[in-house]
Length: 379
Figure 1 (spheres, rainbow, N blue to C red):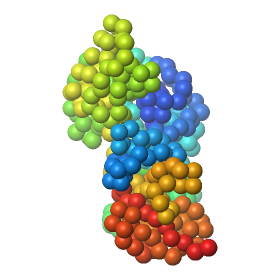
Figure 2: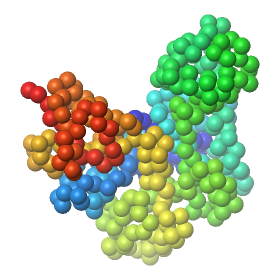
Figure 3: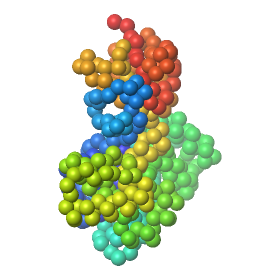
Figure 4: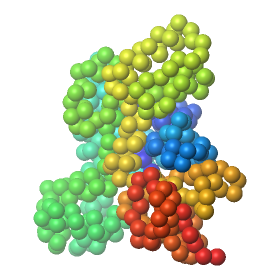
């Protein structure tokens, strides 16, 4: 699973990426700060089963703070987008090609409206136009893929082949054709019907979440209401980055996603003033929004679940307790999970044990979020 991070130049996208991953990437208010995609790991937050078993976990990947487990998710920050990308404008072709690998997109929008459609500073710009233009660009990109070999396309199977680079299943194609009541003989589709089809397809294949960034700027007051009506999540990437840096330097105690933090170190007057401003923003929006939107992308939009594997006991052979947490697709079975852990576990699967209930479950058992599962396999 990969989450794509998109947005026009100067939307704060690179700051969002750095705040989510703490990777040292270039940040700047000018077009095409990001040219080649930056790849890192953001994190989703779940309740760690260490609480249930009354133990202290030792993650192999990610980390755990006071019973909150942070599980890594691959995050891809692609080149800044400008209108006309599907026609090759700006970094358009490269941007769209980089997006092929993403299962879900987080669109970082400048909620303050102080940068225009090309990322240049301005006094007033409606961020809802940015929301619209990204959807339009992606829909037009999908349309160009559909129509590239239109003369050779005759049915749903041909369409699935055309979109194979985006891993589109034939069942999804057929479902959309039925949902829109389109003729199975696709040659009869009008231009409008083609656009309606690819729009629905894009929504299913690459759903978009809106990160309404820079909400702590005064100018955002005008737009934030409309952005949240479209499903936008109020965010302040700068505030999240500042809090994580302060926490790393032992100035504050902060758990990503929390609505407050505690000052525990010696801070200057300037630092105290900045932290107080962040506190005000947290009280207003309940969090910086970064953790909220990461969790929303993985657990609500993609509907993945977090499952913890153990082998005979809670610790591995190195003595690490509850070392692993896997993010797996919805409707995954115990057998699917066995293969996810290791191919041999899948091939030699005997049974599985729900460690919390101590009950045996079969290979067809559908896993639930926060399950702790022991796989029993043959030699």
